[in-house]
Image 1: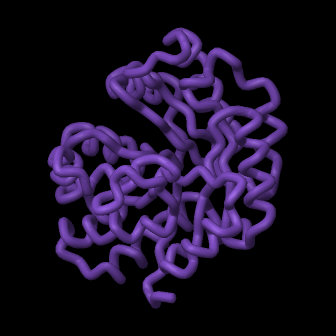
Image 2: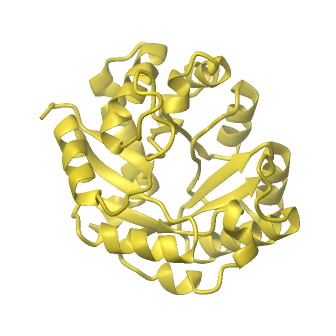
Image 3: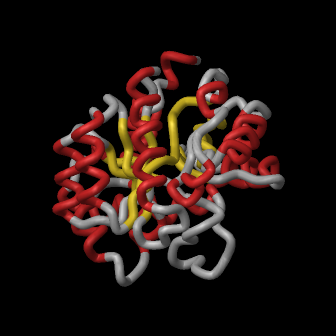
Length: 252
């Protein structure tokens, strides 16, 4: 096991969680957030998190699932293992749910995050302007993160100007992701988190394989190279950022 300790702040653990978490720990990824995408998946995430000391869950409704509404979400947020609302937001690329439904469900979850003083985990794709407009109108929660950040410098500045964090996934390792790397270079390390979004988005050199939290080290290494910092330093700071963002020191 490595001495460097990383925090995967956004993954989706499944039935093989025990083995996946063990491999993550052996790779130095010692803390994880498993993320809910609808009511049933949020319930499953909570049950998984309850089995591990250093795994926490979120509960929320992804824009793809917005057509099904948020009934039951409030109750899930009461679990001591739930540390954030989400992932919530807008996805105008796939439009798996009608846009009006996405907007209403996103509004509801912004309200819940504000009402319960909980962090908000945002998914946005092809909807930056609409996402920012809704946040500005509804009130951006004190702790907000744009997960799997896919913007460039302009979008990063818009996030940071709203005191939001940006979470970097394995996409940053892709040859086509120069805009993301430019944003990482300019962004203060205090505004960065790292994630796998596993089982999706395996980083280079693992493209085409099922992703898992153990692979976070590849993304962390790229962030360290871009920022001109040691991997240990990036791991330490992004872990501190995640612990503060999810208020883990307050609940432990």
